[in-house]
Length: 322
Image (cartoon, rainbow, N blue to C red; front, side):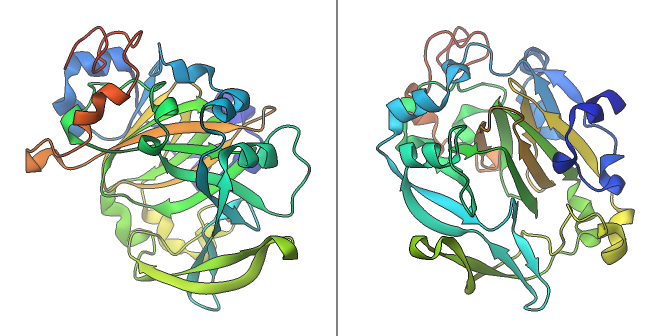
């Protein structure tokens, strides 16, 4: 508890009402593999230590990523501040980052240790690793969850600090932290009534390099129902949104080599931080409801993942095919 807090810079802290929340349950990948997927799927969120042992991705740095996929065009998120979405109370809207195309190598230069200061914040969110096969080959596919229900594999690349507002997803999520730290604030699905959900109008920043980057002009994008209309990072959130006091938060510190299992429907906000190295790297695997029973997921693509050196409990690794 307290000793963890001491390592966290002020910029990566939540307001006291959340910072004082209990820390999430912990286990190890070994224990989870021994218990089987059903135990994982029927429990709550779980922090798994030593979850990326044997991954080639542990060695990723900017040079390695640039060498592997530097010439791939991807979509960069750009925003005026480190927090997204931001709340536009006047327009009763949430404002999301601008999107613009960038080569991976250019993004890494823009946000890396040697970068000049730029007048906007940028990160790569939810990059489909199937489009980045040289990187996917550094990721082990665990059998902690059924590979047949795997839907999406994503890469997340940030700089020194990024804050992602409260939302929920309809997938079971295994998030693996490769560089830096993520501090995840979690609420159970039943807390939705305390968390200011509703039809949220999403507006999006414009982006114009000639004008210095992100513009304050925003345009209507869509309406979403899975994003909370409150800023959990605001110090006065308990007074502006008093119902949050009735919620049951927990806080997870996901460090390099850890994984977080987050069941579908759990509300989460995330602060991604990297002290010193200015790089935050994570891979997450989204799993669809296994109720459908058919392996329509990515399991047919298991051979695109890392094959050698994954150790026990990896599809294609020493444990065989699950």
